[in-house]
Length: 253
Image 1: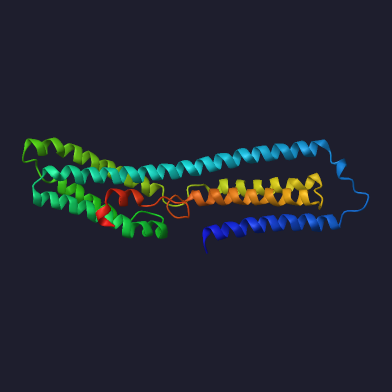
Image 2: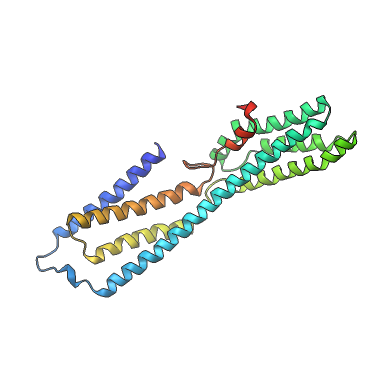
């Protein structure tokens, strides 16, 4: 099932449930019930709960978005560092240059074609990818510079490999959900309390009030879905992709 279809179903279900509850509740209301008698303190409490929950939702969205942005930046840094290694290898003799670029291409191809699906399935980076990056580091480090030009590029290449390794480690730490379970518990309970407080205002069956209730519940469902979708930077609909690798290594498409 498409995640967007799941979102539409969740929002429609939340809206339908709220409207149905309002309609069924009003059938049990006696004729002498007066909605204008709602105490002012209930209106104040409803407003305060709504404001507090809006702040919590905002912080949660900001947190998962920051985690996603960080994962995207790490991936771009990893791809850029490897691209620099491949470009700076130009100063080496043809055989060694081909070897270094072959190591880089093998690693990038593995990440794009294999490791990405491995991360989604297992929630971690693949040991094979770590081995391929270690092979690149070993091949470069094991060859002593043969000229002044090679000596000048040796340390920058090693620095770029180290940067790629650091970005890879950070990518591995961002695999899987980033939101703690206790935060999800608070978000869900807060949503139930916030929506439930609407009934304390004695919502009637008028068209405007039903639209208000349905829209409000659908909005809460949408925001929770948005947080859930951003919560896993590499495994859900609005996720980080391998596009930086594809852009910098077009020959490997």
